[in-house]
Structure formats: structure tokens, C-alpha cells
Image (cartoon, rainbow, N blue to C red; front, side, top):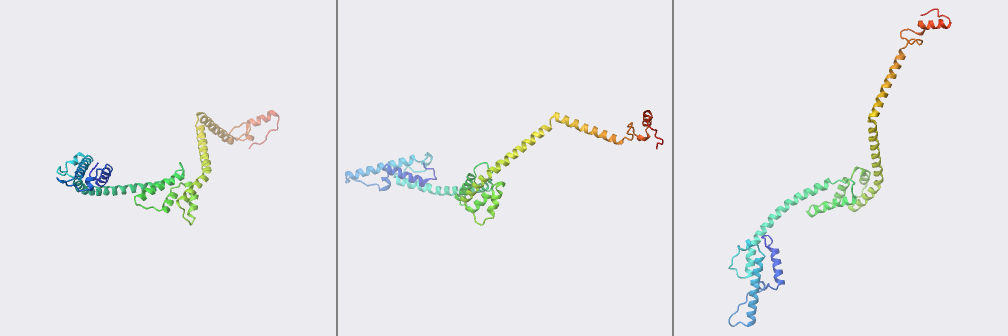
Amino acid sequence: MLNGSNFKLWQENLMLVLGIMDLDLAFRVVAPTINDKSTSDEKKDKEKWERSNRMCLVIMKMCMPEEFRGAFSDKIETAKEFLEDIEKKFVRNEEEFLKEIEKRFVKNEKSEISALLANLVSMKYEGNRNIREYIMDMYNVVSKLRALKLEISEDLLVNLALISLPTYFGHFKASNNCQTETWSLNELISHCVQEEERLKPDRTISAHVSSTYKNNTTKKHERSNTPKDNKEAAESTQKKLKDGKKTADAECIDCFFCGAVGHMKKHCLNYHAWRLKKGLPKISKIR
């Protein structure tokens, strides 16, 4: 259908259909003129042309929206004139329409470039999928940018991919920086796949150790927080404090016979009485 912005394509399709149907005679030849002296063949040619002209007008009008048909005069009798009139009315509008579309496309193109660039720079490999697929995703973003006429070199893509690798690729990135040669994209993918395979056992062991340590710490913390353990810990602390008090009191004892404080054994009256009872010699002098 003719919509005011697709005249060239509409005209091409129209002429193709009319040619296949053998109805394009009205566009290919001038209308023949007949008179009383015309032969039967000339009259047949005239009838064939008129049929072609009539069918071309019907098909063109059927391929136009109804609101467009009122813009054309009913006085136009030939299909060729009708097509020329359509071209005059719509080609200029089509050019203006295409210019407006181009402006909008340029605006949308800039926003799309900004979004793709932001996506490319922010991409990070998190190790939750195949590294080959990740790098190919980056390459697909670069391909879209190239389609929008923003050229990004392969060297820049390789560097962006290396920067986006996680910390456990640190040794791999350092070794690359020490090299004088520059990797291509295919070489980068190959080296990254090999490095990832090499790091898999170490990452598995590290994750297992971390998980085990975390579980043991949690269980130990849970065990130490039970009411029974808290009660035993409190009783143990009280016992230690009590034992410590007894030790301090023992250190303050002066008499080792009666256990009293304030005099020594040699001055203790109970000690002297005990010696007398046992028949032991009396201590003559007490100091």
C-alpha cells in the first residue's frame, strides 16, 4: 500500500505485478488512434490498450488508502498520467519524510552507541560461565559498534577483556604485561581457556577450605553459646575465684600450728601447751 513515504518501492512492485499480469501495455506504448479506415487488428490493439489502461487505474487505486484517492482528479484518464500525478504529490513528501527519519536515526544512533559503550566498559567476568562465551559476548558488542560506524580495534578489545578478568587471573595478566608481543583475539581466548582450566583445582580447594572453616567456626560458636556451657563456664570462673581467695588467705597465715593470724608458731600458747602435754622440753624463751 502506498503510504506517502514508500513511493519508489511501491512503483517498483506495481510495475512488477502489472508486467507479470501482462497489463503494463498502457505504460509501454502510446494509446493507438483508430478511425473508420482502421483495420480489425488496429481495433483489437486499441481494445487491448484500453483494457490495460483501465485495469492499471483500478489496481493503482486499490493499492492506495481511501483518504489518498480524493487528492487526485477524476479527469485523469490514462494510467501513465495518474502515476505521474502520484509521483508529483508524494516524491517531495517522501524526501522530507526520509530526512526526518534520518534525523531521528542519527539521534537514536548516538544513544545506542553510548549504551553499547557503557555495556562494553562495565562488563566483568565473574567465573559463572565459560570464558570463551564471555569474550565472544564482548566481541558481539564491538561488532554492533562497528555497524554504527564506531571502529574499535582488536588490540583495544583484547585489553578491555584482560582488564575485566577477576583477581585470581592476576598472575596471568602480569605475565601478559611482561610480554612484548600483542595477542590477537583468538590467541587471547585460547590462553584464557587454558588458564581457567589450570586454576579450576586451586579454586575448588580454596572454596572447600573456606567453606569448612566457616562451618567449623559457626558450630564452635554455637556450642559455646549453649546454656549448659555458659553455666559450666560461670561455675568454673567462680571456683577459680574461690580457690584464689583461699590461696590469698593461706599466704596471710602467721602460725603454722593453730592457723591463727597475728603470731608465729614459736609464740603460740597452744603450741607450748601441746609440747608440755607430750613431755617435750619447754621452750625457755619466747621472743
